[in-house]
Image 1 (tube, rainbow, N blue to C red):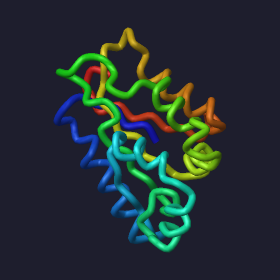
Image 2: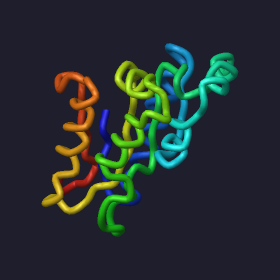
Image 3: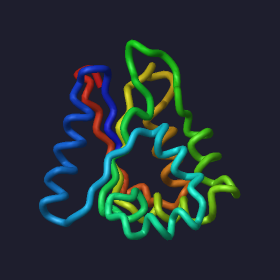
Length: 147
């Protein structure tokens, strides 16, 4: 699920509410900011084995909320572009499983709206398809009234 909206539109509140309900029904959910997740991609395998016992590890949860991918209006431009996200996700030093974990996981991607001419929604949908998620499994919600 991709949730877009400008500052104060309720994107984080909505995503955390969905994750709370999911945790009641199905178990482990995890919340992480995009910048923190990008650093977690570089965890070494010995740390991953240790973290396998940690239910709240992003790789082990049933639902992952990735917040603050881009702040949205009034901030202009991408802080984390789809290209940068994919390069770090697919980095050889990260290990081969990061794409698999992202592909096989239920994720709420929380990001700010941007100038419509940048086609931000389409770029993130294309990225998800590039890592192997079928278009029919991608839900996009835009919380901006003008959208």
